[in-house]
Image (cartoon, rainbow, N blue to C red; front, side, top):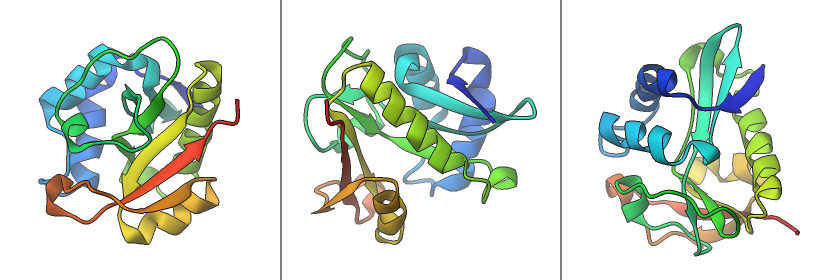
Length: 162
């Protein structure tokens, strides 16, 4: 497995993976995925297996400990250092599930957070995913104020011990 920075040619497959893994209310639109690739490629990582995109993790850098719903629609460029990487999507293609792709992407994002001197990584998830993120070193901060897609979310944070 190779983990690399996103490139524009990844757009079509990244969008297909996004649409397959999230409800229509939760999934990023094609335009948003395209904007993320263009504006935040420094925090958009792709896992590749045998030349195929197996999954990705991405998100903008924010100053707050928890992300806000506007981040799912609005994309702005990242500051060079500081802040939290706010994961707005971690998604694995169906053919590659069960192969530790997500875990490897999280580990790579942690390495990136360290290299970029970020405070940590923040994300929201559904309740059934809390144990997965806790296993990957995230702390559960409780129910989120997010109402993205009309769902109930939980705030999870990994602190970079600079």
